[in-house]
Image 1 (cartoon, rainbow, N blue to C red):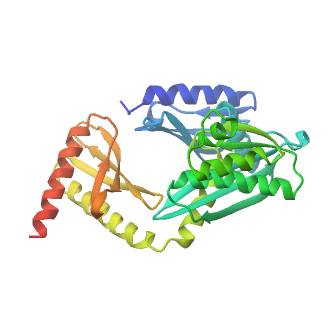
Image 2 (image 1 turned 90 degrees about the vertical axis):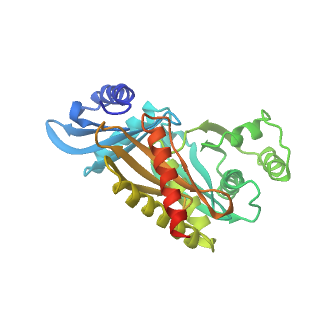
Image 3 (image 1 turned 45 degrees about the vertical axis):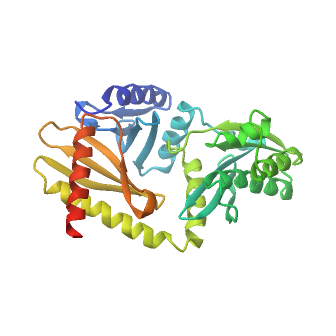
Length: 322
């Protein structure tokens, strides 16, 4: 049985029922389920339109959507329905209320911020940059992104805006639920109180398939990467270690591994599978202290196997250096 099939089944059934009112049909069966994911075909009026995948992240109990649909109209309906299902639907243009999506990123010593501003479906602004204060890493970027959005509102005479965020301090500092204890958060609170703009706050969990949230995340990452002088070297070293570990695993009886993705230039995701039991897990290889590496992994049936593989790999790597 695929990992987390029940969670994925419950989610896709809710999505299927929500799309029926739009005359869009989803089709899937037992073969559609993978570890951490389910794939469904999309059709309308009995015509095939494309497909999408729903991915489940158990560590954060979040779902994300990746779609491959040629019709822009149907793709938008699928996306809007997904957002509504997850509590992140947006105002229409007639409301006159702007929507901002904000994010921050910290990559190899550089803090970036990013934001997009919409009125209905119309993109009004893309905002990105970096800040000098990196003590608080990406959280400094998160707060700065809100300040930059409010600057835009003042310049463009936007009197009301909903700010969608994933870092909860954005709202909690602004409303007084959290007390600011450093110059960064104190400066943020002071700016919010003097902005004279009607702000509505909404928390949206990151990486759940909301494209506008992902746009802000991408802008923040690009801003940080654009001025980072060390990212390239660090990532090359990290990726080489990941590929060496994958090669080591693939030479080990019954285990197979593959490269999944790079995250933030700070970690690499690797999938490891036991071909005898069909169990699998996705782990992260990250930088640790003193330019060493470590792994992060969820609790799965492979947890002890992966730990032992990693220790064996480190022993072989140390032996090479002798």
